[in-house]
Image (cartoon, rainbow, N blue to C red; front, side, top):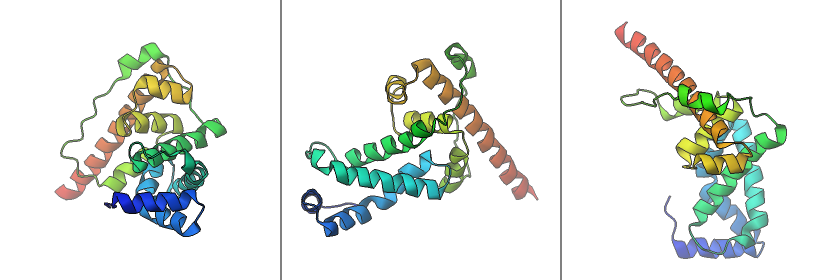
Length: 189
């Protein structure tokens, strides 16, 4: 959805003034897209909705920190990602990982050309990854973080980040190939 910058700026100013109508408008403008971001980190839709709600509350609490430099959507997206990661950091649900020197041996190619899987099916596969793998995969492959940034954000080593990514890619590739085999079996019957 394309939003006129002047209208968005006016709504943001209303939020900074504590106007509930402006908050409702901002929420409805971005909720769908932000839920999609949270869903990549969550295990199910309910958890994604919880993450998004907490992130919106944080955003409204910090709205005065937004100075209009850069895109508001990018700023909001960062809050969504950070909040989603925080859900797991607080619960200490990160899985043990392989030693960093094993990461290079476990790198698996990520080829999905000609895949018949739908976006929702891919999201479901990603959601089934363990929290540690899912978070690193999302941060690296989707959000564009470097291993150094991931390591800093999650308080892990760069090698651990690489290892988590390699394992996540391997598991995702296995699941995608399994789903492709199922589709192929159905289409030949």
